[in-house]
Length: 276
Image 1 (cartoon, one colour):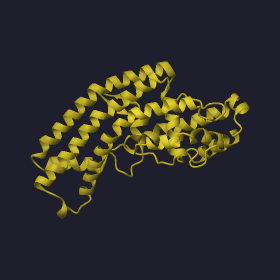
Image 2: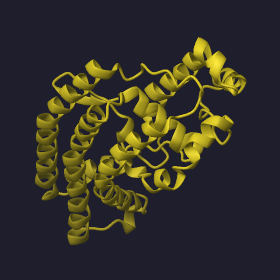
Image 3: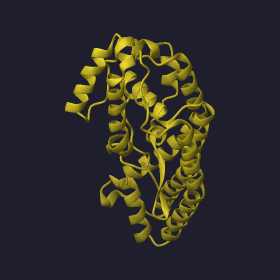
Image 4: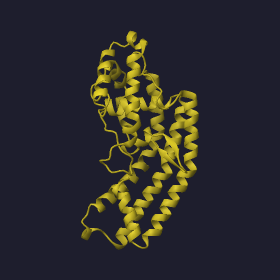
């Protein structure tokens, strides 16, 4: 977890009156997550029952993304984008805490300034708790309405934002700026590589995709260098052309603060929940 979060806890333990504020924030956050987490999981299970598991997707045989699939993807992103501002503002509060944490001990604030800083960070934490599962629940419900699987959603997100538009995967807003996005590295990266492999092995692709050799080469590159972004800056021509008409709309809906949340799946972890 982010150093700002660690410092928040440390401040609370060492700053008397801040203890209650921090504990209250943690209790509120836990309550919000507990109530909403179960609904999010049920919505995901319903989505997977209808359209397959999160990793189960094979790209279209000709290598393109059909226009109607991009339209559906954009429709979901437009509705989810309403949460971007809240996540972004909460992230800014934690970045401010990191800036305070970086100060020498003799320059760190005290008194009212410290109380205000911790209060803003706790408020940001509660805001994130309130929006986290709401964002994931809405995503799952919208995908079900648009008849799109989580696997297709994941594939399009990675190909569009990391490969085509060149953005880097972003960690959750409570993490350090330089932290590696855990969801992408531990789950999504391997799933996308397997999706590319399924396209390469698809008999229909051999007949319909004139760029198949490029997919084969990319699969080999990813197996040799699994940490690299698939097709980063060098998409097969047909795949790139299918995205080009939607470039402006896709770029306008990029939200760094929700990037990792957009790819997350909620699962039960003991008495609580984990986003993987």
